[in-house]
Each structure stands twice: as C-alpha cells, then as structure tokens.
Length: 142
Ligand SMILES: Nc1ncnc2c1ncn2[C@@H]1O[C@H](COP(=O)(O)OP(=O)(O)OP(=O)(O)O)[C@@H](O)[C@H]1O
Ligand SMILES: [Mg+2]
Image (cartoon, rainbow, N blue to C red):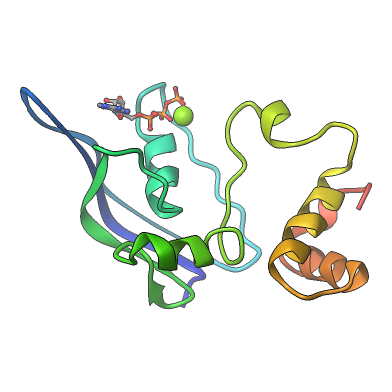
C-alpha cells in the first residue's frame, strides 16, 4: 500500500457561470521515500492538486470527487479540526517562493527537524534520524 494514494481527484470552483473544474480526475500514488515530480503548464492544476491533498483549498474551491488516502486512511473528508492534526505531523507543504517558507540562515535539515519536534516529543538527534529515514539525507547541512 502506498503512503499517499490519490484517486480520481476533482477540484471545483463554483462560479456565477457554472462550476469550473480545475483538477479533473487526477490519480497518483507515492511510496515511502519516493519523490514524485509533477510538471505542467501554468494553470494546469498542480497547486490545486497539492492544496486539496493537504486540505488547504481556499473556499469556494472544493473537492468535487475522488478520494485521498494517507497511510491507508482517508483524509479528504476529515473535518477541519481533524485535518489540522494530520497536517504538519503526517503531511505538510513548502509553498512556491521558498524564501517566504524557508529561512536561508538555517539549513533545510534544521528546519525539518524543528517542524518534527514541534509535533512530536523527540530529541534533535531522533528527529534528524527521522527525516533521514523519510528521504531527507540529500541535505548535506543536516
Ligand atoms: N480562486 C479561483 N477561482 C476559480 N478558479 C481557480 C481559482 N484558483 C485556481 N483556479 C483554477 O485552477 C486552475 C489550476 O490552477 P493551479 O494554481 O493549480 O495551477 P498550477 O498548475 O499550479 O499553475 P502554476 O504553474 O502557475 O503554479 C486554474 O487554471 C484556474 O482555472
Ligand atoms: Mg502552482
């Protein structure tokens, strides 16, 4: 079973002229440690796919169909309070424009360790091991 499974995801925006389909039947899965690159022209739906997966679609944008499973559990239909517990701990995002998301004075590894320790009672050493296990070992500064 893949770590993340997205099946027939649809993202819609209701407008005065009808419902606009921004993401139409997108399916993919990501295994633990796997890196998936998504390429497409501007407006193709990459960001909306990501926003739907982490439960941060801006209303009136909404998931209009399909399902998203993380570690075998559906996360596309969780109430916002439940999704908030999953986000940051089990799934997260670094948005476009990395300078507003990441601090250039610290290594990426240090910032990942900080995020892990914010959510889990873990020593810095354990948190480092944790992000290496998850595939973060390419960062020479960590
Ligand atoms: N607030 C909105 N209202 C209506 N439609 C929207 C809204 N935001 C996004 N969309 C629709 O969603 C589509 C996908 O947008 P998205 O931001 O996911 O594209 P992208 O692939 O991330 O583009 P880029 O490469 O420029 O980041 C857009 O073409 C647009 O039709
Ligand atoms: Mg985008």
